[in-house]
Image (tube, rainbow, N blue to C red):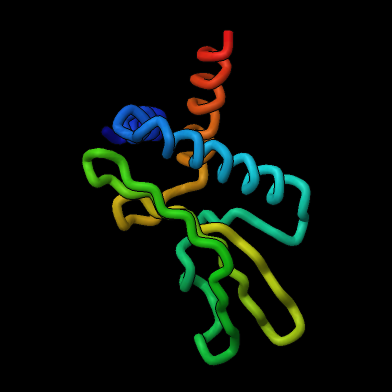
Length: 122
């Protein structure tokens, strides 16, 4: 299962209805926030890659979302604030089964959840 859309579909099919609703609500908030705010970015690189030494900056973790499906597969989304002297940078990290993955996975999950919701309403 190398394809992002296959992984997203597999994760969602084994997620309870209540958690699907919670995940859709959380992803809607995240995507609207990060599309509007230009100071916030979605990270595609690992956290400590190509950064200054750790003592030169300070990290804060603001938001942590964790979802587990029936097969114990886990999706974790966290928002990180990095302080470098007088500059703050916000970014998101996405982990699926303890491996950092691109944000495309979350977007695909969001699209699948929206499609499922509109299909149920019609």
